[in-house]
Length: 80
Image (cartoon, rainbow, N blue to C red; front, side, top):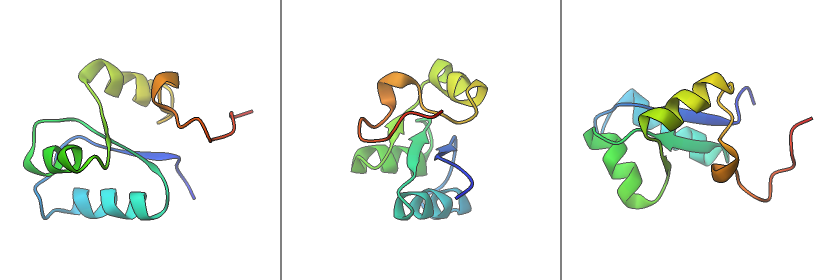
């Protein structure tokens, strides 16, 4: 795949953003969402995604969509 994870910052319950989020989960990718919209809040309520506050969202973008160490899955091998 092209990415290790997906960041969704906004989306309605039935939107392209949430279709992308569901596909990311189906492919075993990390899913990060910013709270505040109907769709992203639903993903958080389901426990399907990591919650990203503005500072975390910025850190993910700067790191090339790699999760901060505290949010990385422990079973994933470190990047080289």
